Image 1 (cartoon, rainbow, N blue to C red):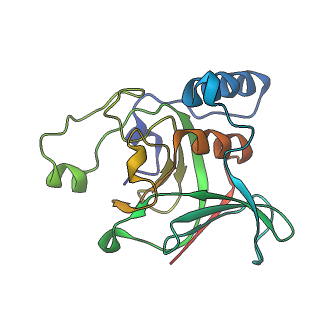
Image 2 (cartoon, rainbow, N blue to C red; image 1 turned 120 degrees about the vertical axis):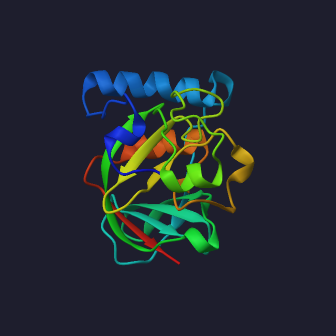
Image 3 (spheres, rainbow, N blue to C red; image 1 turned 90 degrees about the vertical axis):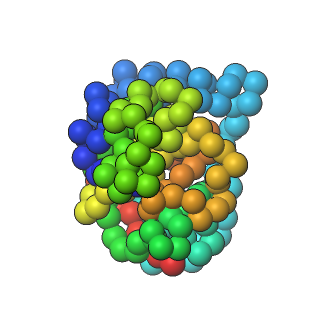
Length: 186
């Protein structure tokens, strides 16, 4: 679970598309993926017949897949970790912020379940569940983010956030902007 506003992420700065942000993203991608493991494309290009405009993020929790619509009948597909059955949500949202290596403040619900957690985990720390980057979402307490626990990808594992491999969130981060539509279905 992630709050859909900047204070949840501590001192993180929202990223804007600019030359500086592009250079930062390139460095970030290399660090997130490792020089020798840098893929030419993290997502798999697949046929996707649905009524969504290019740039729309579609999450199908039952499949544990995230699709980024890239053109007519085409999308990039990623395997993701999604909310546990009692923590899933569906609906429409938009990306409200983009953060590289965000700090994480565990929400009250997480702290109730895990009271030993610190009140803030610094961005980049190995125990930070946000991984390499996060896209915050409007209308709730959720984000699409990387993870430092790659074994959780493909499962029903979160408080409602969508988890991606760090290389995959790096690619998604580079392809979407603030305001990009997000649709979450079962």
